[in-house]
Image (cartoon, rainbow, N blue to C red):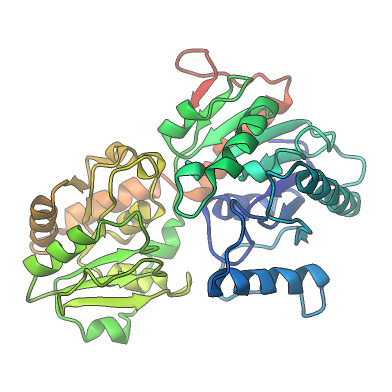
Length: 405
């Protein structure tokens, strides 16, 4: 373990807005160490859309501090709040040198003040989940710095490559190590230090394994219920979803999660789009699925994605059908991969009948070994080694490619 009282500074997403990988990880760490959490400040310049204007208004209110705390206490989010929570006073045009300099100055001022309150005179460990924090790295007297990489950000829809790529190159030149949630990211985002570690996604096992009552809106739907729990976005292959619905005419296809794409291609009447549900109640929906699907397209974005939902499905004990994106293959013993719409639909429908208790137990046994508690312990081991003279090296090849499972 690190010395008691070691502070962390984390540049992450908006605390409490959704339960992301970085938040899952630090919900295990906040009870152990003081954490200064800095909310997001953007991977792209805002557009004139209702979504962007709403986010901007929410950010402005939080920055001014006139209508309550920076992040409201939302129901269903697990763990404690950080010791300090910062709503950054930063403009989203990070590729403009003057703006980037002003943002960095503002971030450093607010972060130093927070550190002085929660852990005076102690050098922090700096973690950033965003390339936009590149200017801060090396300026807080940190004893270690880590780029926690969860996505190939330049490939995300709506993200400006011209904004992100230069910032990410600068960040990789400055940080002491990269910790990546996908093996592809560990290779493609290698820092100048050559220290890159693979830390796959974890799961809140008890949250998804503890039996929940069947939601009434699902009780009305016919079985087998083939479901997807997650953001319905450009990463989803809607042709696969439609094929599953057509192959399952007596059953239902259920989509639970925020929708950010046009769903007009989904024409089958047995497709039910429920929208987002709170994290607290999400296990009840997942447990109600007879099959969980991951119908992702194969592209430069999804090749670097380790889906959170996969372990959540396994913790609930349900069969899983996924397209063959690289990160799912480590669980090949307990899931099924299929590519074409016909193959995918056949596998999903077949999995929805005749499941056996021993198969359910096997899936849950796999998920039980991949908890966020375990991931946090592995992460803290990496941090400890980095703080001890940068001694973190690979167990496999000695070239800085740490591998953790």
